[in-house]
Image (cartoon, rainbow, N blue to C red; front, top):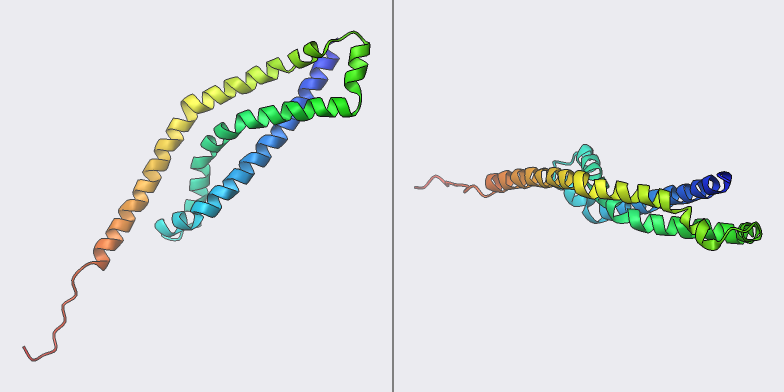
Length: 159
């Protein structure tokens, strides 16, 4: 009896992990395409600044994508069961469709707990670090602007 719930949970977690990775990579790519040049230019052309920016944005993007990945992972798992007629075989053994869906509740609660911990504990710290990271670049830009705005005195020799 415990083989079927474990099988369904494994399928769900596999699809969830795949969707989470795909969405996070896609959103990180879009974020880098939008802000990558600014980050590199503001931090003196260092590529490590770009990696630090990606690392600081990662928890926020994961928190944003986690519910979508869970929903699509569940839908893909149930669609796969339906495609291979496994739902029909479960119904012939006397399992209701509601029980099959209830087997997805424990991994769903685990994902909800991870979502809560990320949104409550990790994202605020990474957001503060990202603010400090951008403030550091603003200080550098202000210092460069001060250097470039200095008055230049010229003398031609007649005075």
